[in-house]
Length: 379
Image (cartoon, rainbow, N blue to C red; front, top):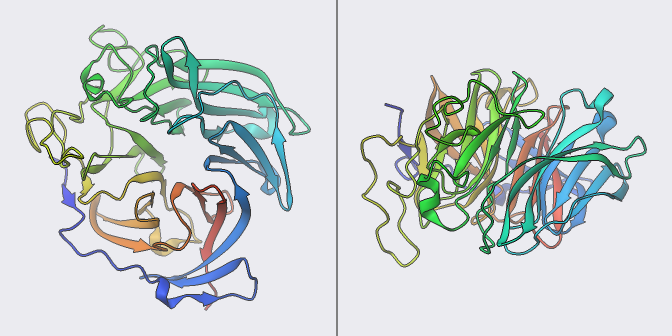
């Protein structure tokens, strides 16, 4: 049985933004946190609801905007990349997550997700393409996977991508606002999907041979997974998903397992009505951590490296509702405490990633969104 930890059992460390110290650069500021002081630098502003980012060689960063625009940011230079496929823009739909291939320096290949329009509405899709040598367009575009059932609901597309070290990749989905789809194993809604990098199905997927579920399924029973990351030190996948009113969850999805939505949940419906049978039932996995009230989590990273040594191995989660970054302290494989930072300072935090330089990067989902870079401040 996993260690279940509810966020309000141990009081979170309050946001310490009151200790703000303006840095010499008008685009940077310092904040005190429990274990270190943070320098927060604005790398880029004026972004239109950015959603995902990918790091390229020589400090370049690709950023998606939900409206369907892909941007290449190189210092003070910023330009749009052509060749993005049509997206179903509206609600939570649009151009979503983004990852650069491990060997991008030679392949120039990227992976991205989007809400694909079609008969019946839209659904989550995964595509790959080559970024041209001049960085101005996408070439050799290939859709690798798509959720077969399209619907008109504009919510719960999930959509995080994780490139696993074994050459596989994970894609998360949401229930598309139709909760019962998360328990239908012939449907890829409310799931974690696992694929080979070319879009084919790994032979060792849990349902690839049995036919008891779609062959691309890794796990089911998720509501809307908008954060996912690979943990290199523990060799595992972490996810964070939205609950309804309460019940946001941290999970470590395992093959073939059912994470309960909407049969079990620690949240209730927005009208206060009970959802499912309660918080536990046989055959359904418990979350490793949950929030009540909800923080609306989106974006997740595992801290590593020397730059953030005091946070090494901890989970960093962005929050839309409370506009904060939260750190989940992990000791002996268990989440033992939570620290909330930057609350209300920068807006809705949509994505959290650790860059190749060791810094922590954030995207804020606003009409004037920002790309932020976090580093430890000097003594």
